[in-house]
Length: 166
Image (cartoon, rainbow, N blue to C red; front, side):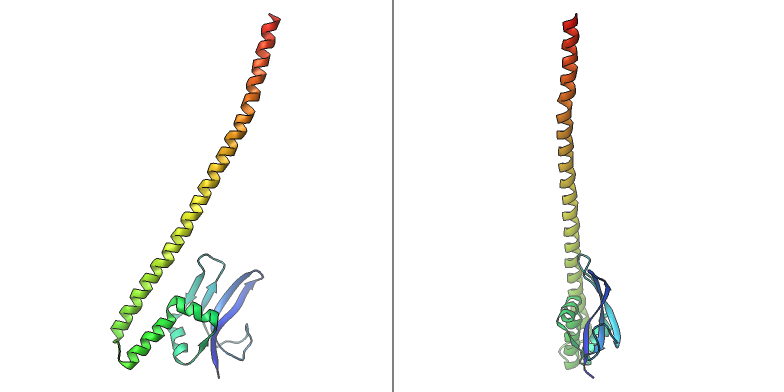
């Protein structure tokens, strides 16, 4: 039975949400699956990915073929690297501790990159809000300035009219 690791679509129209599943390649896209490995939500920025890393590595080692998108997600989360390091341990090129240390170092670097992107997005969002507030203040000040001379002119006209009567 050929097994694929692929995405199974959920969510409503225009708001996709995917499960990452190991399924028989002959099954329908949203049909029967063997095991749910995680979830992928592309609606958030950065995209939210939850993945059972050990389960994904187990399926990869047993011969499951990921689709292109699933392969990108597995690579992003480190499942392909973990499988690669496990192969090195089996061949004797690495010890289990060395492989675990390499994977943890990569994982920390990846988390730092994702956090930096999230911080950059929140900073850009805050800057955009600040600029919008400044623009709104400028418009309000211009509106107040445009209305203020009219009031002063009316007061000045009333003073001249009262001065002429005297």
